[in-house]
Image 1 (tube, rainbow, N blue to C red):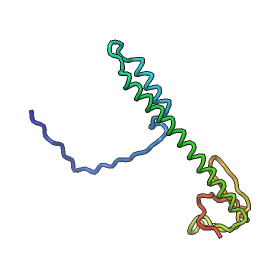
Image 2 (tube, rainbow, N blue to C red):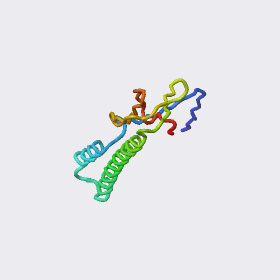
Image 3 (cartoon, rainbow, N blue to C red):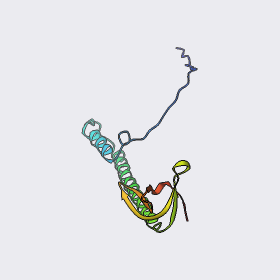
Image 4 (cartoon, rainbow, N blue to C red):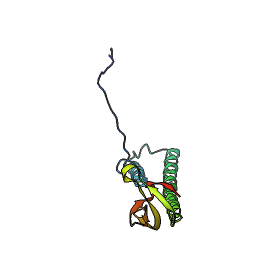
Amino acid sequence: MSVTGISGTGNTTSTTSTTAATTLGKEAFLQMLVAQLKYQDPMNPADGTEFASQLAQFSSLEQLTNLNDSIESLAVDTNSLQAVNLIGKAVSAGEGDSLVTGTVTAVSFSEGSVYLTLDGGQEVAFSDVTSVS
């Protein structure tokens, strides 16, 4: 039997996006593990070492998820502390036509984001700050 190769001349593009719906989390992994145990062949059960390996993977996944949550929390806390330290200092935020300058009079927090209120009443995102003096 002969097999011929496939060749193409068209352009192909590939995009990869990671969303909560496409990534497997702790719950999905545990559901897959339970389904595997539920539907395994009783005459040929899963090997004990394989099962232990899967439980170790689940434990590792859970620990990595907890570590990620802790790091995200630390990043928010660090941004909050840095923003509070800007009170009374002159900052510039944005660029070009949207450049805003002023003295920070207040700091506010909304949905995990940090905002600075400038002396003119303008509010800018902490992440948009380009210089501090």
